[in-house]
Amino acid sequence: MRHSIEANLAGHDSHGIIQIPTYVDRMTVGHIVPGAPWTIVHESPTTTVVDGHWGFGYVVSEKAMRLTIEKADRANVAAATVIRQGHIGRLASYPLMAVEAGMIGLITADSGRSPKMVAPFGGREARLGTNPISIAVPSNLDGPLFVDMATATVAAGKIQLAVSRGEQVPLGWIIDRDGRQTTDPNQLRAGGALLALGGTEGYKGSGLAVIVEILCGLLTGLGFGVEPSGRHNDGCFMAVFKVEAFRHLADFKREVAELARYLKDTPPAEGFTGVLYPGEIEHLRAVERRQNGVEVEDVTWRKLQTLAQKYGLTAELGLAVP
Image (cartoon, rainbow, N blue to C red):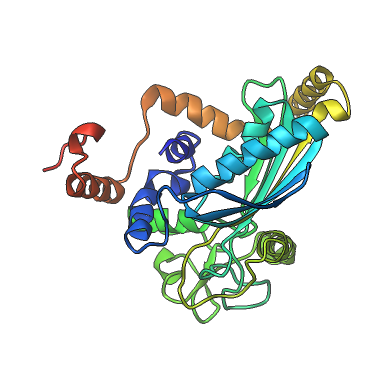
C-alpha cells in the first residue's frame, strides 16, 4: 500500500491505488502469493539472483534493492536480478532507496512471458512489454533527481486510467488491431497495442525496450514471448553505484544540484514556462498533494469501497460504503 500511495503522491496515478483491485484479483487466482518465501538462488560479493516465489513485487524488489545497496556499500558496485514476483509498481521507488544511502540506483523491468502491450517499431502486434527504466542520483536539490520512464510512448496503466475516467488519449499513444492510430483507450484491450517511445523515431524506444527485455527476460531466465497462463511476472535487473568510490559524495551532490539549476536557468521556449530537472514535477506534485490530498476517480473509489466491504475492512480504511 505504501508504494501505491507514494505513486499517487508523485502524480503517477496509473501506478497508485488504481492497481489494488488488480492485485486482489491476482491473489484470488493464485498469481500473487502473500507471504511467499524470498530466496537467493545464487550470489557473489557483488551480485544476487533472487526468486520471489510469486510474492508481492513491492516486497520482493524492495528487499532485493536493500541487499544490493548493502553489497555496494561494501564493494562499491553491486547488481541483482529478480524473478517470479508480482507487479512492482512505480520503478522510481527502488533507485530512490539507493539515493538515500548516497548512491546512484538503477532498475529496469519487464513482464516476463505475460501478455504484451507494445508493438515493436514498424509492427502492429504487441510483442514487447512497456519495459521501463529508472535511474536516481543523489543531489542537494529540494526534490530528488531521477528518471522513471517506459520505453513505450506511455505506461499501460495510463491507458487504464483513461478508461476509468472515460477520457480519450492523445494521438500517437496507441494503435488499434489494424495498426491504425486511435485516441480510444478501449482499443488497447481490443487487440491494439501501445507505440514505442519516440513517435516517428520510435525505433529508439523500441531498441531500448529490446535491451530491457534482454536484461530482465533473458539474463533472468524468464524468457520472451507469451506463455498460456498469462501470469504477470515482473523480471528485474537492478544495480547500485557507490558515489564515494568515484569522488566525494558532498562534492558530487553539490554539482548535480548546480547542473540542475544551470538547466533551469535556460530561457523558456514558446509555450513553456520554464525548464524542470528530471524528477522535479513529481516533487512539486507530492508537495501539493500532501497539502491538498489526492483525487481518486469514482470508478476506482467504488472498486475500493466494494473490496473493503467484501473483506471487512470498511472501518480500518475509513471508507463509507453505501
